[in-house]
Length: 207
Image (cartoon, rainbow, N blue to C red; front, side):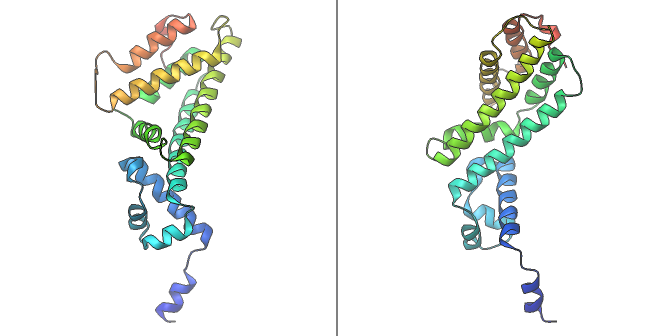
């Protein structure tokens, strides 16, 4: 069998090629930042000509938006899974704080920051950024409301506190990218602020 015949038989379907391109864009975004997701970079990672990427992608704006969504949705799923190891809402929120901040700046934080910035010029990305922010807010509000229903918190506005908490996480996370004010720890700062909003002792919010 000739090499040409083998190559034709091994040719990937359009769906497989699109999936391969999307995965490459996600990997580049996570490793090097969202602004590194370019036509040439994706083509090089897949090992094809840039024209093939352009043929299968629905434009670079859409590909960047898809890469952003894949990265941050995966982070949210991981955080939610980590919290579910216990029933106590206060402990679950403590696990959330430990997970999103960790010991080092999160690679996903850079993707978020660049998503906000690049979204000012890429409407498809802006739409996806807003959708993922809403998803995070709903997840946080659900956890806070769950704690209220369990009697761990008093009568509180879960939606408002979730937006407040998200703003704190985003702001301190962005500052952590340049390692600004490492002491006191970002986790402790957020724990104290969230405890005040929930009306509990800061030590209750420990994973």
